[in-house]
Length: 377
Image 1 (tube, rainbow, N blue to C red):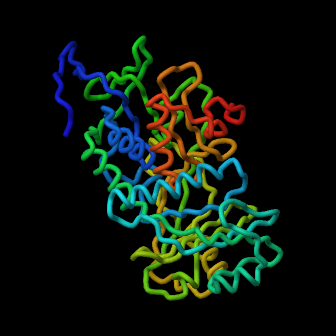
Image 2 (image 1 turned 30 degrees about the horizontal axis):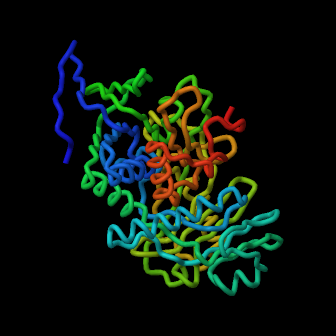
Image 3 (image 1 turned 180 degrees about the vertical axis):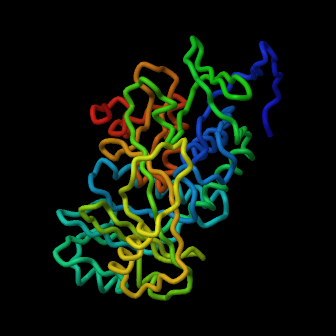
């Protein structure tokens, strides 16, 4: 239930008389998770999303996402641990299952991944574990027994519903026009009203640069394509196939097995630079053919009949790391951009981290994702 408040009409602008603890801009997975985690702590939160609920104009739509413990640098280990714990926490609270563990294999031309219980494996060992996966000769393989699939659409829907149940307000179809810092916090002006709060959380995904002009935060938006095949193929189910990626010169190819009624899919971590204000163009026949060829190369037993391509947006930072923390020179403004193509798995952990920061709890473990780090400028 929304908190009681009075609206004040002045110069044709509606001002909300409530001073919120936090205003969240964006209701993708990280904005939704932050809103939920703050609301369940008793904070007074409103989240504003420019599109309608369930839209396909950002990075959080779609049935499934990958989760894994294996990462290229130990900086990520604590946050990955928090992510797994966070999904367990959400599952306990919701009574739903959001993660299906299938194991995974990750192939790289140089070196490998680390973290959790992942370990280097020969191509023969990887093939024995996941017989449907064909890793190219000469690659290094990492096996991650804790890898799997997140039921993304279910999790996003639950987080939003649970946020409302906990007392948050969610405003869909409302566009942010501007925001500014004040002596007491922040003011956000939308196309419907003006809101005030102690803290602003910017979780706008592809609109990050537009929401944070002249701040030095740099991010580039890519149009990314995935290709999914219909369910019912035993060769694409665990244990024959797990989550996987193959490091190619053109980009990182990633794939998921068939789980929970969602078909296996493949994508590539590379794409055209895209203006998020423009609806994402559907895949061309040539692009679909390329995705099909990649899927058949790495999962030779696949039947691609009846498959479907989907387009979405990635917000890419220069170092492919997230941007989490207080904006330099802007007290009370927190950035929550867990982006760069590998962020959905961290949803509950990022939500918890943002709630901590709004509550005044320091998170030095996230300094490697600071908005002020040199790699962003």
